[in-house]
Image 1 (tube, rainbow, N blue to C red):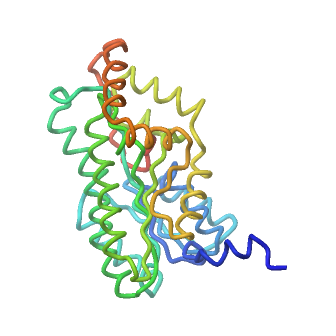
Image 2 (image 1 turned 30 degrees about the vertical axis):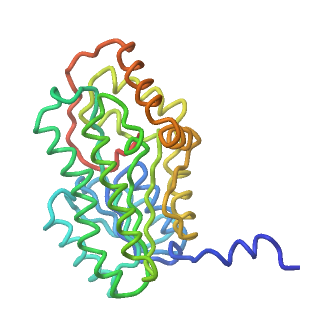
Amino acid sequence: MFGLHKLAALGRTRRTHGARAVVTGAGSGIGRAFALEIAARGGRVICADIDEARADETVALIDRDHPGAAHAFRCDVAQRENVELLARFAETIFERPVDLVINNAGVGIGGKPVGDIGFDDWQWALGINLWGVVHGCEVFAPQLRAAGRGGIINVASAAGFAAAPSMAAYNVSKAGVLSLSETMAAELSGSGVAVTVLCPTFVRTNVARDGRITKESAQLADFLMRWTGFSPERVARTALDAHDRGQLYVLPQLDAHVVWLLKRYFPAQYTFALGLLDRLLPQEDSTTTDRTSVTDKTGV
């Protein structure tokens, strides 16, 4: 009998299986989970990270079960030249063009209202979270388009549409990634190249410890990640499976769907409630934790 599982399989490809992949921010968190899962699906992967030691750790983990499937590459995604070198390195290793690009590298920043953030922090956050993705898309999209197959997964965040107060730099960076992904999905429609944008809420990563986040906000984020956050492995698998189905938006958690719907159907009430909540919360010390190692730190 032609089962439902076979019927469902008609609507999906296997882009993430046996892929020649590049993952940025692969030294920890969601990026490491993506790299491990791609290798488990029979693929080969370039593990790019600004912290080469962390990238090497990811490669070592992959080598345990899939020897030779992974290679490390030091890459600062905020620097266009680094991403161009990454593309050349990947083509040299694979001896063929890349067919799966995961723009995942990102940093956390939050705890200050607009006017107190400072231009240096704006440039730092947008340079990595937004320009890093722009660089990855500009460099790799022509290769994928020319091949007529493959995919791009951009890691954004529910913060890109939630617009929570005291997170402007992070919100703006992730909203930009969301918009970029939607635009590319339209541009690449019918080309054989799929685009997926991942918008999680809390994921158990290093975001609260390794970003530029005020002490109180970092403590709250760390608490929420521990008690409500999904594992990076679960989020990565969900995103890869959705990409195989040709799905544009991936909101892996229920709270992201709730925020999406509230914002859409009750925009004024939603914004008022956010502002009221922000005023009721205790005011924070403006001191931020500043650990500038840049890898996968995407949380909200």
